[in-house]
Image (cartoon, rainbow, N blue to C red; front, side, top):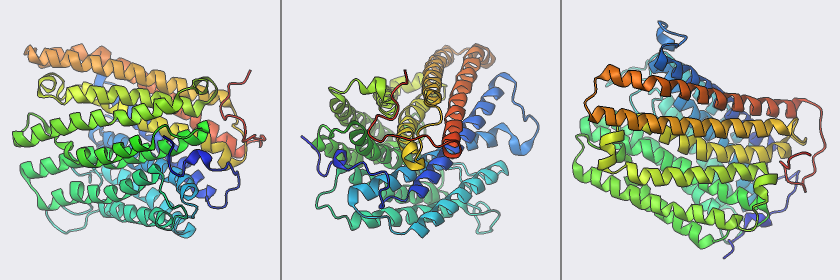
Length: 484
């Protein structure tokens, strides 16, 4: 079954007037910049685990504060900029209408980068709040309305509203009678972001205390991933893959089933971050069951992607953007299969509070959604700059350094989590466990260094493609065909 208003039928027009290439270009530039900074923070933080942290004794660069930059700059700097930049390209092409306002777009871009910088500075100064993945400063003294710092929390909510206005306008005015499923996901993702941030981050801090607040914050942790990152990633994947392959998505019906299943099951998942806690067991059981249900439904995306790839296996060799998408989909299958099992109480008794958890988190956030953004950026960049890549081989270095680094890191942290968990179960002394983890932590830092090196290769290639000699680019040729 082919899709409605399939993006594979959209003409390849380099100077498409509907698309503001400047906004696409600068959002993707900001995304890669914050990817590099966030990865660098993560690499530095990893040195703490075996006694080589370079900022020991400096309070505003202490481990607890710098670690927040690693996760938050990925979430709000890399992912948001990456998704917004790609939406500036995809939504006008699918709707036949421009975004609400170019001026509003540049306002959103400037304000959003200010928000990320203010967030990072505030966290280094100690104004971060205790909400995982939402440590963005509220700006107020706890329990009062006394302003201490820039209210980043509220600025993010305002920014999310402006982004929704910018992109929902062309969707509402669409010239097409039927909406391709990508627009379903992107529309929902923008609306869910606003609701998730207000209900899961801001309200608990001001209105809920104790276990109730923890349960609601638990919803925020997972809903930010499941109700913003996931629909954005799925929606853009359903647009870009058919366009790059010049082939319609295999089943529009299957993609719609995935949409409604995501909407129904995912909001209940968050409490699985607090299993074996004081939260009522009925709520924990509900989170476990809904997690298993949504992971089964994720197979709709996996099946749809690989069915669309059927007969185009050559693209894995000749087309680097498709290779990024393909690798990300393999990571998606693995991480969802893993999630289905490790949210059970039986496995939680072993892997809870161990390195298994960050291993899982890196596989899904870097190995899936970041990989897809890399694929989109690799495909878009020559179309935005009007020049072929400065050095295509650097893009392959970027791919292999990142993928191999992630595989090493995921395998290492998974093994470390199991060793840690079973040693805890055997009541081993704490320092004996720490000594057993030392080798795993060294390997993690090595893998992280590979990933950072890969991002630097890509950032440098993007810069040189913009500023170096213009190389004619043939839009009819696959972007990343390996040069002879």
